Image (cartoon, rainbow, N blue to C red; front, top):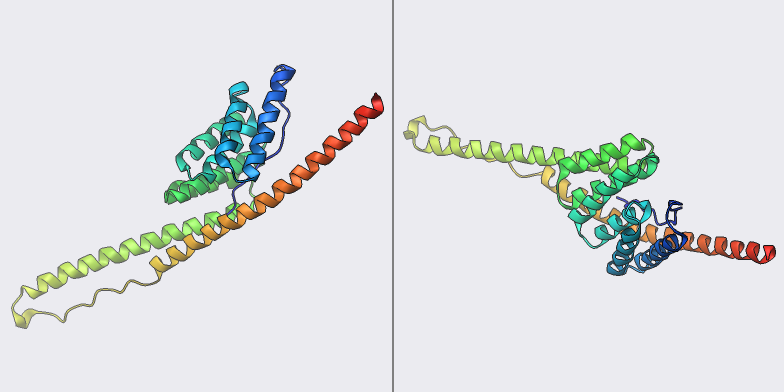
Length: 234
């Protein structure tokens, strides 16, 4: 399961003074750097500083939600991503990323039904997202396994009550005791699915770091090109 990341600098509203825009961009860059170094508390502080200047800036809102997620602050991550979804009006893929990350956080909270709905919302925004489709299939299987496990437990309880009633009858009226159904695959399958998800999260962190390194290199190349153009114009 992968956490969707948008760790890119974006254009800010032109109504903000140049100095304010620079301060927001600076805090975003510092936040991204700290995030890349897994210094999530520092990253959160920088994103929060950016949002003090421009509360509606999309990137720090989204990245702050991801940072809370990395700190295992599931409720804060969900709240922040929901706030981001209210601000993002145009890009379906970014909306899908927000819903995907909400689904991940809800899964950590073991709220499977809401997690499933979040993944469905992500797929409505981006039907081609195979990662979200996989997560949805896993959660649906976990829900089904839990339901089957609950049915087994209820059946075992009914068998137990029936056996207790039979034991109170005269010996000649007693039926052969029934064996409680054994606990089998559903519970084990749920544990296996949960393990798959946690392994996928760990793999996502590695891939996210690699993407961040690539984006930082691209940012440096663009900055160097801009400097060369400015020197030429001068």
